[in-house]
Image 1 (tube, rainbow, N blue to C red):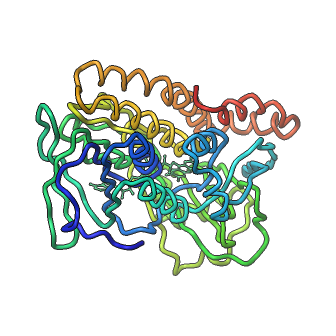
Image 2: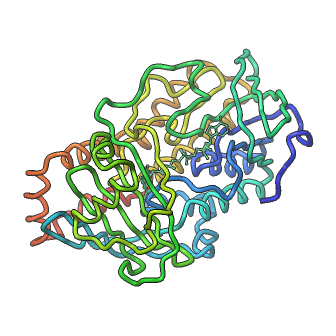
Length: 382
Ligand SMILES: Cc1cc2nc3c(=O)[nH]c(=O)nc-3n(C[C@H](O)[C@H](O)[C@H](O)COP(=O)(O)OP(=O)(O)OC[C@H]3O[C@@H](n4cnc5c(N)ncnc54)[C@H](O)[C@@H]3O)c2cc1C
């Protein structure tokens, strides 16, 4: 992307969004549409890779459509999904998907950040933000891009800075991840073999976690895993652990996943937080809490909370009182929390080999039994 130089931007903003993942970029799109002066910053240079399964479910597509950005994602080459194939050590079954798209995170996130800029937001990448102070009428943030730094003021800060949520630390720095929480790993490889046909998510569920493979635009394969920390230690790293899972669950190992591939890891995944807001500060997306990714809903949660945060922020710019924080908690519960509870139950089930084996026997014979669950995951936000 064309780099915006920190030295060229104004110092006063209505909304500063920290983090240009799906949550932050869609919030910037929407807040700009409400006529707000929006600055969107990300510490990484774009296009950037992010560990993810790369699958957008029906709910995520609904959010993109409501923001007028779905066609843009299709045009970018996103692959239509029709089947979720789950394999274990001794079984394989196919669940039909009502809808869904697979797209790499460099393509998706760059498209959304570009969309925010098209709506009038200023996007500065390669720019790290740190919240300095929260005053009655505005927050102050320090931005650093290469050797330059700038202090800006924002009437509202939207913390969309992912699992670790550095922006929220000043209001809540309690340990948030669960002790048995899995960690994530992923990689994207160019692949010309056709053992992983497009339109199908392959998910191997093994004893140390699960590993998903899906074909995205440009014929690349997107590989993403959630792994037990002990299993990673036993296998000697996140890459070997992901490959061991593919082997254990009878999935082919793409030739491109050779020793030279650089795998990316994540911190602990499942997190819940005591606070999702501070004075003139709202946390959204993964920064508001996350549950490990088996059901592939994180981007739907991020997009839903991004759009909701934009509405609330735009209304609360002139007057931000305790009621705004309470509204944000309620909104979070309504848009995300109940889906996360369901996902937590599934994640716990996957840790019990006997249950996984019993369930896979049942679903091999009657895959339609999973239909209500799949329908619920693809339902639009209420
Ligand atoms: C293995 C795995 C597989 C997954 N598969 C799926 C899937 O198939 N489908 C799905 O919907 N979800 C999936 N998810 C979940 C999904 O990736 C996340 O829920 C989603 O990315 C959350 O979006 P976000 O915008 O909240 O945060 P992120 O996408 O993490 O974006 C946060 C951004 O903030 C930036 N940032 C951080 N700190 C700062 C700072 N100080 N200053 C400036 N910028 C900063 C980061 O650089 C980053 O770009 C998966 C996750 C994992 C780990």
